[in-house]
Length: 253
Length: 317
Image (tube, chains in turn red, green):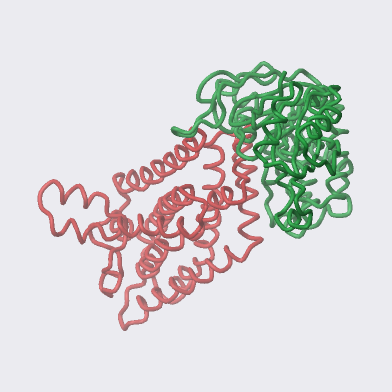
């Protein structure tokens, strides 16, 4: 545990000592702000954070891999991975430590965006249930996307490769309904079960990008379902495990 | 142990022991298997075959115990460029399992030892190569490891800093068991009490540096310039002399120089020591009716000896 916190603290410091955390946070606030305003500025608009959530989950397809792309790729490039792997650290301690750093940074960013909620309470009368479940869903969603990003970062010493691979996996999971809609039977159901969050219905102002079939839809509606929590937790666990395996495999090369 | 990368063998069935307190130099050309061996010893990569133990711990089954007792400086000094020297070293200490009071106590001593005092708050990325090397050495010795493994610690730094770094390493040898790699023989002879020569993944010699050069000083090398002889005829005549090991055209002389020297052809002759080779060569040249213009004994440098060893030329013994 001590090693995990040592690594996490070092990485969090690096995030906030470099422009990365600030640039990503600024972009996140701008994009979610745009979606939030679009969703509440119509006449008779609903006082909800659905628009904000749609913008957030859409943007995280690119933002999460951007945040995590440095974490392992840079260690490989600088050669410092050789030091980490010859220190008395286990691979999972390195992976969890780095993952937690990215998660904390993302939580800080989500925290900054919560003034949208304050605005809702000042000018409207939002329903608290969907609001809290939506935020819980967002955190679950963010943890899954960060795990995918971290895995992508472990694949090579090139950060751009990490970004492209990470966003690629997330995009594939996002538009999986394009494929499932054209299939039928079991295949279609299986693919649907992997629907990550938003789809390209993001341009459809009625749903604000929260795909009806995806695991995020219920969170946005105010329903906390075990299946959705299990889905995001599994994605997180599987990709963190894959990252550990990639690091271990390096030894055996 | 042996280590292959896929079908490519990097180290083939090598075996050696380093005793407590010994400084052993690992000498070999680039690609000989030095780095691979060090990566196995430090637990970075497991051997394909065989066993390696450090401090009594097996590097595969007790990897964490091994890593706790080793300080490692890889060939490319691994540094976080956006951290200050102090922050970097503190972090390295922490991931080696040092508690904060130990780090607090040890850090100033190490910074002092590698003479980084005035740069301790500088970003690592702004340091010159020599100071980066010192930072790398500092992280290797910070946690007071029993065993130090250093891969090419003086590569790529300027000559003055090379001298300082060597001094530093020699001093470290008083407290640590050390395995150090280099492709420069004088460096190894200056620092180490024992040298392992590795080539193409195999250990070809294991000796004290002094003995090593002595053992290899079996050849006397003579530069000869001869007129009137065809090159093959001269070389054959030389090889017929019992004490001559080898004779060949002097490749160091360019064709323009050859033209200037007119009909005198330059040769290099290797002979057994104490054979009065020069005298016999002169006699042979005269007997064949050739002209002799130069007969100079050449000293063999350590680099040449090294080359001899690793190119596996037969030196007669």
